[in-house]
Length: 290
Image 1 (spheres, rainbow, N blue to C red):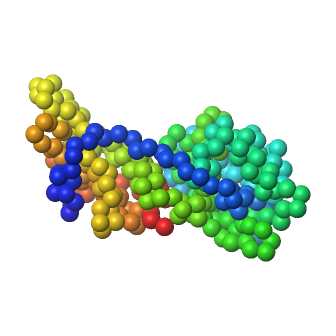
Image 2 (tube, rainbow, N blue to C red; image 1 turned 30 degrees about the vertical axis):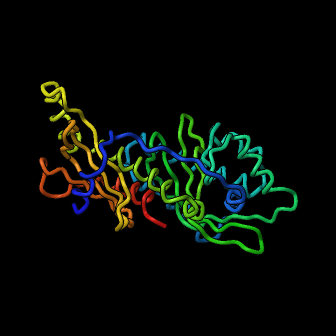
């Protein structure tokens, strides 16, 4: 990987989960809040073929996917009817609402203002629901056409649902993602990628084998470098062992602007490690540059 020597010159840092920055937004939620109760023929057809793109067809995953579909459709129906009260049980107590971290009450207030008596907002879901694992919940992405009667536009939207029972923890779309600062996008991408890389069986095996030997070397400790954004657009990082004199890399990873993750562990394989399709799709959805 072309960035290894550059990484080796950086100050040593321990691997830590990247922060989930919150910023501000007002009217983005309004433009994304009014789905149509009776979808177009294309939306109706796609609803019949909604799929769980990221999981095998075992009972537990299908149950979560079905619950996610139910919540999204209830969300859609409430917005079509401008029924803000029906939205309340669908949201978690705290919501990442487009580019802001908000309480449920604040989100409902924004919806109520957007869907007042004179509102002409409408929204139509124009694609099937793509359901992927996301942390301790699932993300549901779909295309929507939304806005006031005079200026509706189509955009890719995402709802993230967590908890038991599940509730909407995050609501965003491609337009709000594009307004995030590059560092915010890098933080979100880096957090997702780091969790996926650490959970890969080959990576866990390599790290566990080295960690078992560390008690013999009190001056060494597990850690890593990055992730950092390179000049060519890649987000890169590594996992390995620190000492006071140097950093010994065990695993390297990179994500290109196209959202493709590559992971290498030279001691395990000379080839890139395989990334599970569900993880690859999750990285692409999170890290692909707008």
